[in-house]
Length: 256
Ligand code: NAD
Ligand code: 0WE
Image 1 (spheres, rainbow, N blue to C red):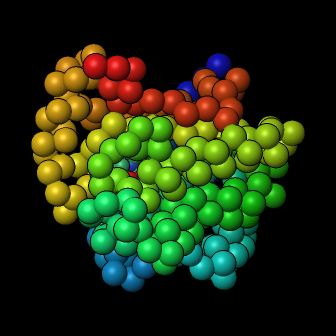
Image 2 (cartoon, rainbow, N blue to C red; image 1 turned 135 degrees about the vertical axis):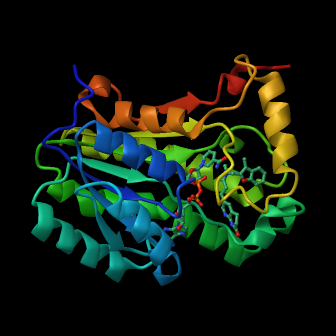
């Protein structure tokens, strides 16, 4: 049993800036000794992401928009050439058009529904399929979810539906890839003030209510999510697959 990741290679998706949950997980994986490949979405995010990524000794930056099959194919061909094998994949990506996260769920358009599921859910399946052949020694795939998949969180709307589908994908992928000793798990994080949370109306009120109701009487720190990412990436969690682990200060257990 070990949290040590020396000799392991990890690819992390979803670093936008220093507040990103993916960045906290990447830092944790680096500290545990993993060799890191970190991807960012597009040119617009390249400058900020690259600056961060090169600050981790040995980490390399790659561009990949997960809504594009050719970019996924190209990335994994590059990773195979560069590293040979892969042991860990972190998927920390979600997107729904901004208008879908306002007003009522019943107003969700076909296009918003499609985009939310394509970027936030299907991408995990596509990345898992591309990564599996490189995970010759077995591996660990980790994604990020939110309790809006299980309970109604006003205005989380189509993202709640997408996260329910994501959690279900975790179970189906865990079944398929289990025979290759590849584990697939999700972290259900409590609210964290990241780029994705910016611009969400009343997010500060949500954080306050969350801290008041959670058994630990506070909000999660992004590094607590990062530490759970390292646990799930490492042999310390070798008996766990298909799970959704809550890192939310206990908020989800409360009925009132
Ligand atoms: P973030 O904005 O830092 O990260 C989201 C990332 O998704 C960004 O890096 C963005 O570039 C990437 N992304 C979006 N579309 C993409 C595409 N087409 N191709 C490639 N990358 C794309 O915000 P975050 O809060 O760190 O979010 C990371 C994950 O954590 C998401 O899955 C989110 O749902 C989940 N999560 C967040 C919270 C929270 O309160 N912040 C809580 C629970 C779960
Ligand atoms: O998963 C998320 C947010 C994901 C997200 C955020 C954005 C904002 C910018 C997906 N798509 C977009 N699209 C944009 O244009 N969280 C768990 C954070 C979050 O978002 C909420 C929340 C919480 C919590 C939205 C409404 C209510 C609660």
